[in-house]
Length: 312
Image 1 (tube, rainbow, N blue to C red):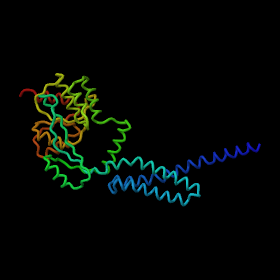
Image 2 (tube, rainbow, N blue to C red):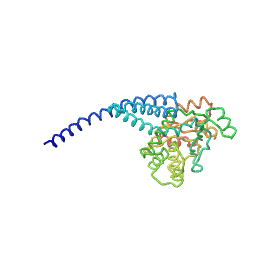
Image 3 (tube, one colour):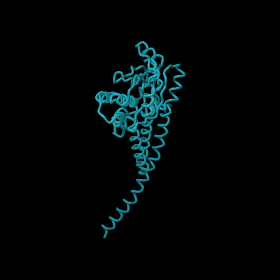
Image 4 (cartoon, rainbow, N blue to C red):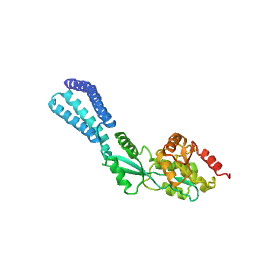
């Protein structure tokens, strides 16, 4: 009888403590989240750098440890503080990869020779030279360094904490296998659209260290010329993604691609409809002679190329 009474008391005590533990966990979570969000927000808007952000988390944990030592005899405060520190440790571990991007200060864009995969096709893939700058904050030093090295610089894009954070997120997502590289996804879209294995297209898609998806439309057009579906004798600079259904979607670095096409002497550039305003603005500001053909679907491109190739 006495053993039964002790067992009942143990069960009652156990059950009475479980809800309290859950409340303490929730309470410590509600304390740790604002600390993390405030520090993260200050970092995100470029007030502090990544070292200061993560260092502040460490300092907060140290302060919490001191509080833990002082109140070690108070079970409720002790447990709340322990959970608070654990949550901050999780946040710290999640954000630690930001330090890998801290040295990245600028991205330099420059001229890259347009590539015509199929000779005499007239379809030129427009790539942009990208140079990552680390540790150098002075724009003039960067310009002097690369100008003296015969690299024609178009733009210097300053890396912000937003850029660094987005890079960290993208890398994490890709590492977990939740998202494919843009270049690989583009390759799948191109193959799904052309429905044929073409050796030189496959060779391009198997290249290493390629980024971006803006070569998709050019690859699809080149494949159609190879297949005899399309005939072209006019040089075009081409940029735009391609979807399996033929939709052409927005791309980046239109200014650079316009300048590259002009410098190459291409009379036409094909851009997605979503980029036409930017393209027209660049043409006006830079006083370019190149003609712009904007499209939203590959069928529009085919029809426009047929019309332009008709004898006058």
